[in-house]
Figure 1 (cartoon, rainbow, N blue to C red):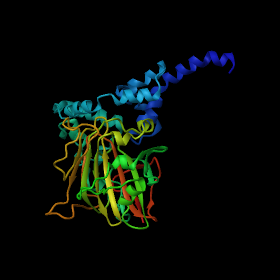
Figure 2: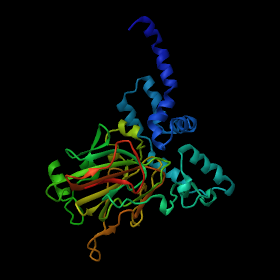
Figure 3: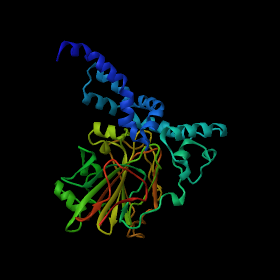
Amino acid sequence: MCQSEARRGPELRAAKWLHFPQLALRRRLGQLSCMSRPTLKLRSWPLTVLYYLLPFGALRPLSRVGWRPVSRVALYKSVPTRLLSRAWGRLNQVELPHWLRRPVYSLYIWTFGVNMKEAAVEDLHHYRNLSEFFRRKLKPQARPVCGLHSVISPSDGKILNFGQVKNCEVEQVKGVTYSLESFLGPRTSTEDLPFPPATSCSSFRSQLVTREGNELYHCVIYLAPGDYHCFHSPTDWTVSHRRHFPGSLMSVNPGMARWIKELFCHNERVVLTGDWKHGFFSLTAVGATNVGSIRIYFDRDLHTNSPRYSKGSYNDFSFVTHANKEGIPMRKGEHLGEFNLGSTIVLIFEAPKDFNFKLKAGQKIRFGEALGSL
């Protein structure tokens, strides 16, 4: 390197640092909504402020004084995201004065590009608090359910990854994987649970793939704050079991998913498992920062981000009883649950080898659109 370039090194690094909020916006908050580049630039300042309010933004300057990535990951994991998310949930429940609702919701709509013309109730004064606004319902005709394909998108969002599960590992984003067994949890010999004992990865897979010639497939959908926050049944299937993992509530933004290995295994999540016409089927709702509330409509016993549950444990519940031998039947497109803000849906299911996804990585998708079919 020549001396002039060496002298310019600090200036270039300073310029890069000054430009970092825009990079952070594009790479980490740019996925929040489907905006054109001029619109994204216009709305950059509130998103940049939000970025620096997040714990990750507070940790970024530490790299300037020699913090290694592993140290920053460990520090970020120590942030009390569960407590902060509970506090945010309480704040969301506070009823706003009638005169303040339109300005507050209008700012959110403008920032995240929310399309209120799709909402069942367009009048902003109707929503008493932020929680009701986040969980707004859509007009029935806003999301037609595709009847030609066997699996549809359960929610609005962005496709992070999809494909066949290989070596019992699933990609949370391109190049970053996590263990299928860690994600779904350890097997148990309890009759009610869908995971009989196994001693190896191949054995674990064999307990999920119940029919000869079938393969395991996965699909990861990221819900941004501006998306529709309810999720629906992606196919006709029967839910037999629920496993709740209390855990951290770190951001699941794609940028963070590239940064923290096995992020989805660290975060709180609700795993619903059962069967569809081709065998094993599961839908997992993964919690995130400020998404302490994951609600499953037919499961009144589920309480997420509760202080009575400690991280590292899991709680099982079976929907198969003496009175109900099958479980909970779900029809394609039927309401299943909701997040309070935005997060991630992970589908893991068994299907014949000729199953084809109708997707592209990184594409925006809406509830009811086709994911794949035979």
